Structure formats: structure tokens, C-alpha cells
Length: 102
Image (tube, rainbow, N blue to C red; front, side):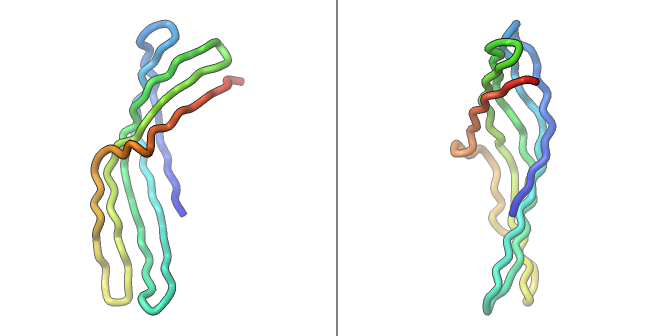
């Protein structure tokens, strides 16, 4: 299970084109129950970067990615381990958004 929260700011570059930037904090929890039961908590922080094009007053298209930093904290009966420090950009997490304004 995971969750993320972020705040974005759009900086106009011209009439219909904007740069998107902001911060995002995230977290995931994973539980394994067997002979080696464990709980893995993955906190993270990322930087939202992207562009938005306003097609009209009601419609917009954007593309963004979130390079970030995260780590796995594993809780087991024999102790706590910190592993998988991840830093950088994942090309699989480029998002394309189609938006309608109410």
C-alpha cells in the first residue's frame, strides 16, 4: 500500500505554456507474513518537474516526472535494516495528463 502528497506550482512561460514544479512526499508499506515475517516501510521525497499546454480555457495537456530519493526500512524480529537507497530519475514514471477545468 502506498500514498503520496504533493504541491505543484505552474510558472507561465507564454500565453498557453507553463513549467510545473513542486515537491512530493511519499510512503509505502509492505508486510510479509511467514517464517521470516517483516514489515517494510519506504519513505520518499521527490521533485515534480513538467510542462503544461493549455489547449483552451477548459482543456489542458501536461507531461511530468518526479525524480526522487527513497529508502527501504525493514522491521523484523531480529532487528531493523535500512536498504535500497534509491536516488534519481526513473524513466518509467513519466506521466501524461489530460485535464478538464470545471
